[in-house]
Image (tube, rainbow, N blue to C red):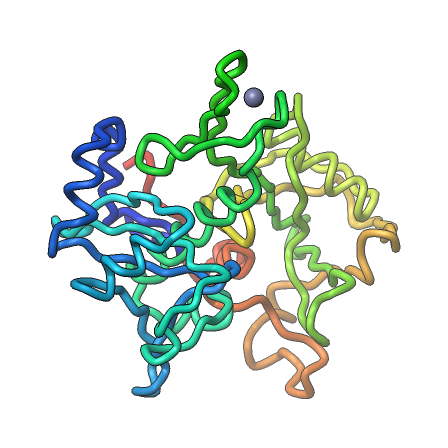
Length: 309
Ligand SMILES: [Zn+2]
């Protein structure tokens, strides 16, 4: 597929069938081939010394030592035949600070190689889930890690409920009408940034329903012709963004100030790079975001993904 969104992971073979085999998991983790991705409180280890940040993957004695001391370990899969594991080192005394710095992946993600960014995001998402599911949501007993770190099972023999990593779907949509598109400012956006609307999908809702509801809640605009464009893993902390274009019935709108700071219609002409204000009062979302891609696709600067071939 062309134009994959950042943090997606075509090159990772998740080898889910191997997770079932406990002995295979131990054998892989103790082999010299294994690479370990340490996570400390949702932060990833990155070496910034050379100027360009690089992900730090542990291996050999260091990797095995960190693996043994880790609270949780997750088999992520293979990249070009090399097995990768996420290890949660939160709260542990380790010498890892000598190898790099633990940072929020969103600060450095766009500067990493795509494959490294995908692995780090995947590792972060999995350890985040583990740290919040130590207890069974059904009976309250402790849970234990099984299946290579992809399931937690309740230790209460009368319960044994299995808990799976969760991903919360969120819809993100560029609303357009004629030659204009609607961009809004969230309350916590950096000064000047304008972006597409977005919101979480609720139980019992289709993605298309969620698009229509969120747009109406935020700006009181009715939309139709909701068309899927592409998606992006967003494990910050636990989402996947599902991107759409949606056509507004009219240009009238009314901002719900409990949800948005402001919104405005912009024409293709106004969004030409040479016409954008240079004083910082208006800028678009980052190039690595699906929001930016939805805007660029609508502007006609970029083709959509070729999923259907
Ligand atoms: Zn239970």
